[in-house]
Image (tube, rainbow, N blue to C red; front, side, top):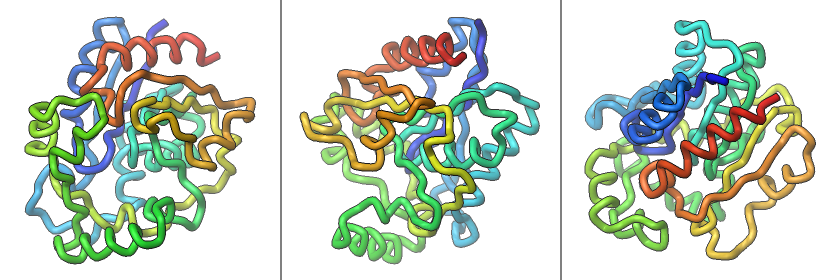
Length: 241
């Protein structure tokens, strides 16, 4: 059965990062709509007015413009926050939210609240130094232990732009608890080096509306393992009922 996928990228990246996944889903007969969120298409644009709600509105406008119903929202990393908030706002348009190593939103908290206090502080300082943008990591950092070649990581870094800082430093809004979402969580095993998932993700394992899946790759599976991502999303679409 054909499904409509809306693909939300993680930080620093745009619709382009989903290129191979988009092509693969469409080859299987699905509709696939990768999104570039506000502030991620121009590295020199002023992003001072871009906050968490801006990115939520970006995705909501796509759902409304295309009049999508029963859409499957796929959010990678930071994109998980956006996808879940959209599902919270428009449950009549979203049948399932898929977190690909995604951050989970908690009402009144920001993405940076998931970081240790010292890192939280240092990231805020970096955002200030880079005129309101969260800077792109070095390619070596992106590649380290993540199933990417250094050449792949360099291409990612070259195409990436500083992420609007307010979207990760300001609190998100959720009107429903996470366990009310119909969701799937995709764990990328190399990301955890055999360690445990974060406590908030781990707590969702026992929730009836959630399913868990794993991929034997790193944090950027749409680049390191696109065929496996396509296959898994196709399976999730088939099980959505």
